[in-house]
Image (cartoon, rainbow, N blue to C red):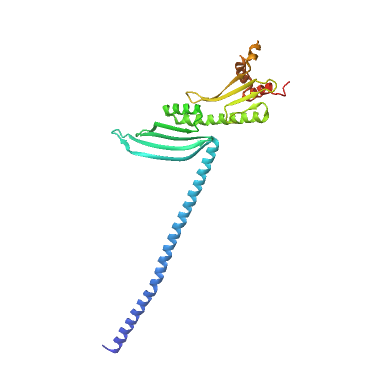
Length: 286
């Protein structure tokens, strides 16, 4: 091999060596570029997840706000709820009808009344429509001293009517609070004439007369719920008078007092009728 050929081969080898070194120098850059791209992807993913989390928090805050509004509007506060789908009772028929039995548990309160509900819902789904039927309903309420509510709960269970239960309970509580506030108002206005033996939560209000010892009027105010779930007040007047006074009542005023009181309620309404009755027995009335 002549000297020129050897020199050419040596230059080619040197060039090849330089090219390999250049490629080796480029690889770290490529790695850095790949790492940079991976970091950008991760950063973008984290940013998207953060935005999604912010949206969920915003939606949660909105839902809580709506629940708070509904609670103030209706008076109901739901504390616990759970649903269980009974897979064993899921059925698909030949007509493409799907039946699913779901069990629900719900607890909460409406003012001073707490309740626990357990009910089963049968969902029936066909190609044309979906429908739901309540197949079983159990109601537990406290406190238990409200006999009207106990009877009403039994009727609601028999009818398996959740809507009636919530509507009637709402109006019962409204009337209960109105009665409590009315009794409290008259006790504060006529402290020497009005007596509440069981406090403002009582369903009875006694009216004593300082001018006529032994004479008492008792207002019995009950809250009733009929078969259809309608809630309404029922007020009666009882009289307590000495026996000798009965013999002197030639005009049968005491005997007809209850009927006259009902007529007064129809004309004046509850508060005005009670106020008139109390003023009649008040010591300041001449």
